[in-house]
Length: 83
Image (cartoon, rainbow, N blue to C red; front, side, top):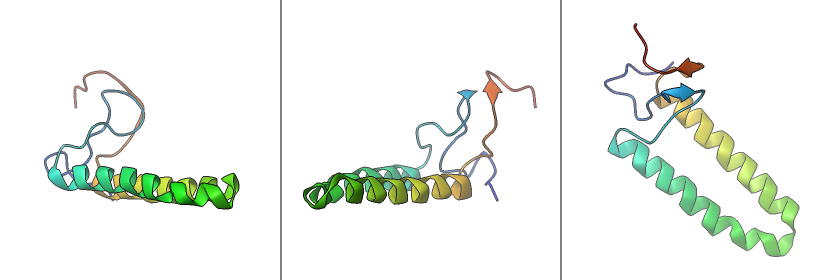
């Protein structure tokens, strides 16, 4: 369940679908952890590109689920809301 706008780690994008730059420090750490995980996972390229691709997919799904859980409700937006 998405959090209210005041407590959401990830705000919804103003245009388009998804989330923008983290609003709270927890979101910044989640994003830095994601980038660090991808960098650390580059060691898997030596085993074959498919291993790294699978690793990136799993890490990205976990980031998406975290954004869904701790972010505002994503929906297609065309700018400022009147709600």
